[in-house]
Image 1: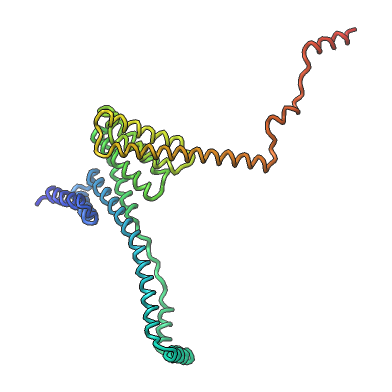
Image 2: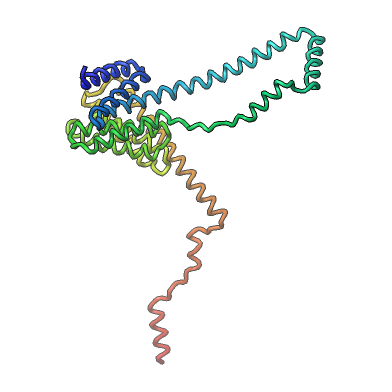
Length: 323
């Protein structure tokens, strides 16, 4: 089997596992395909890197969900073990006499002190120094690095329609990673760039393209976490609503689009209420600060302004002086 055929087979298998949401295996297969390609050509393939990075991102999401569930399960298991241990202790103490005998035995052990073996064991433990362990790189960071490589390759290629589409998808996932890791300024930049590229790639053929709508919405999500970007956030969401309404009107809607439209409208209404509340709080805060500092209203300054005498009065005074 040639290298080209081997890579093709790995990519096909990876795609199957990715479709089945087995991201662990798909990620390993994409990684292997990239390694073989790099070794055989001495360079990287942007498309293979993108597929690898996308699979890594989905793997990171799946791990994030699983770990969240495991923490709760472990807490429940620990609580269950503690309850079970408590029950066992109660069951073993059949009477007050047995409980007292156990206390006496424990007291004798304390008086005797630790045995020689226990003492040696404690000394050995004291001699063992903790080893520093390197913090493992997260799946999100790995996905980010691979997709950054893909982005770099795409940007160095001729910017035809196909490349613009692939580059926009790369920026889209980079934005998703930034949202997941709560790096909202970076998410804003990535989604804004994604929107710019999608407008170039799709706007001429369909100004209300679904991916353009998606980009407006995702950009509004990134802006939502910045209080100073409230107006821009609403603007992006309004644009997404407007384009989705156009799509429905032109009978290009997909299943669930009407429900999605209503959800976006509710979201916009909530944003406006939040913005109004924020403005009210800001005005009240400014008023309180002025009150504390004793800043007088502007109208109070009018009494301090000296009025000029009319020109007629000045002319009469000049005549009197001449006389």
